[in-house]
Image (cartoon, rainbow, N blue to C red):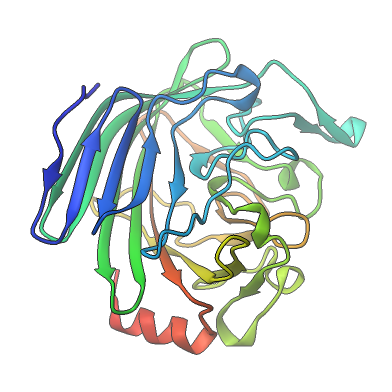
Length: 317
């Protein structure tokens, strides 16, 4: 585990600081990213690393943390709601026979074994090796994770967070990745990389390609991208987050699907998740690797679908 290091200034104004519990990235004096690599220890919240707060270049916070309705929702985090009977998501587990979420002592933990953080050029890179352990402490998954701050464009008020995770099965029996939806709760297909927005984003605008708009239209739908726009109470400014599954990583990793279906909430709370297992489960055998690459654009202003398409045309993954 990396220990405290000095700030690393770069010509672009990016500064990286590594502490005992967090890594921070500043861009031109704005702390755009804080990565909690030693997570909160509460077992029922399935301890795992998370990103919070994330900020726009204007300094507005675009993530929520431990809201009253779901205390285990923490910024942006990679997790699994149903994994071979274990819950790496947090909270109760959906039990179809009882038609409700049940508080079970089945919470897994994701820990960092190594972590390095560097700044250079026009961005920053965090790299680490992690282990996913079951509630009994058994190592089930080995993960190699890379989080990058890139495409910083003050003139457009935007920057990109890119996240790559390669997960390798360690259990003798194949691991089964699912969701509450695959266990009988219709529409609750959340699993994988999950963003929880700030409370003021509740009721925010959700858009996708081809004129798709709204939670009801995009929930469970497969699409190239999804964008969420919300308004900040303190400043009155709008912010937009653009989410995209960037496709499989290099190296010939095994892929159950090339892209994801979207789990999205707007009216109940602000949340977006390109789901691993919205409609069906998949298996990860011992020694096999699943790789996912994600891009999240953090932008000031209310982006339209045409603005999103223009951005994607000019910014390849």
